[in-house]
Image (cartoon, rainbow over all chains, first blue to last red; front, side, top):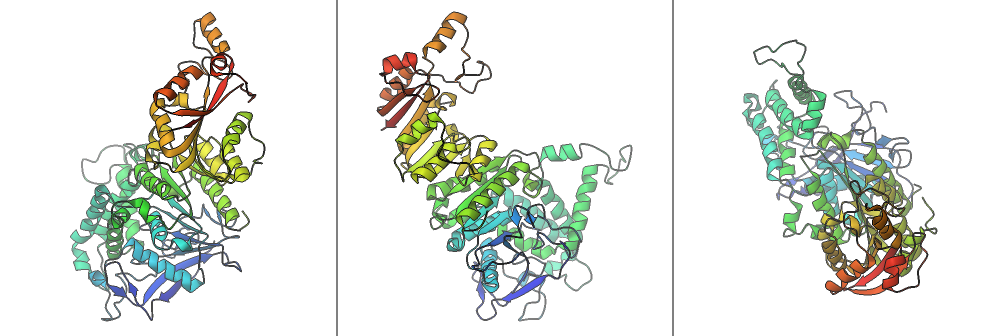
Length: 378
Length: 202
């Protein structure tokens, strides 16, 4: 698919969005993309929830990087999420930086960028914003809500908050709460940003420089958590970068160093440092079982009609199989119809974005069967 | 999508015992053939557990709900009395802890349907007696070192375990590999049946 003008909806103009923190936001802008056409009985809509640093450009060219959509392998004409049959919606999450309201946007009260005055948001706040966008687009019930990683966390909050608006859902490599290790890695990333003198307590907008170094380090750390030791060894080993011998210095001697530096430096061109702080915070605050006195099953009590598919990846140590199975067992205990598989792969957490034939097969079977029960042609 | 009305004979014996409209958990559901039949022909609310990715994908493509996992560990996560029937077809002998699994089946389900390959069948015994080696037959087709079947038992053995655990046998259906029922009691069946089906209740 070619490049296109991004869409933006301005929501919560009359009545403000009340956040989990108690703060309110009005208005709220949402950057989004749609693919395919909503059918006459409005029964073919799929919402794709994106991961931490992804965006709405799921199957169209990214406006800054010029790269292909991040899930074109799965979304498009004739693909598993077939845009000839389904109306696919993907929106930039609240707090992010590609058209949706976030810390980079002007605070309507002061006319200055929000910076750290922007209220802390949660995954559920992102979901409330998506629900309002779907209202705006005339979509009542979703045929399917799909997401991996933080996207899967949003799908879980869809199940707890708007179960009546779901026919089916797909959750990939996710968790219902952030563990101490998850929070620890995010904190390293945030501290890297905040330690950069150019961060200036978050007031770097319009000053000609931004905390690129700090954000790049945050990205490098996070990127390692998306891979696996096997994947790193297989891809880089101890190979040297453009040299025959060690430099006895601190250049990027090793390919893995060069790779991470590249990941860091390209990331800062497309992502806002404060957005990174806010979104990682939202993920850290996720603890769905806590809202139900530790009984995750109770979170799904009103979702027994929703067909669910949960997939984990064997080498994912960020949101490992055990966390995904926790979700599955809770769904089972609540009587939610759920299928689950752990895909055998060396690719770590990022596997959900990669070519994993077993995952594709399961997704395709699940979506086609869900279409049949949803009154759509499979 | 496969036609659900033609079922493998040994699975048909199981299906015959299931009340329409009940809740069924099939442990080791393979490609979902039995569950698919039960969902379509007997309107059951069916769920499965399956170890192989191939089996999970085949089941999901049929529109079934199947969780990848193994009975030894995953049964512990299911609530008490959440199913009317729990089915364990020709898998008890592959469990690490068959006794614990048997008890789990009847904790989760009001009834359990268990089928076993009968190690007491005369050809198996004859093979062991004459060759002095672990038998390899049509029903038991792997050698001792690479078989998944680590806890073989005979019909008499399962009757003993069931009685020891205070479980009652509601139905006992000894049969041949082709699903043909053998009209005989447990003593003769222990010698003649390739397989046997037990409908168990607490």
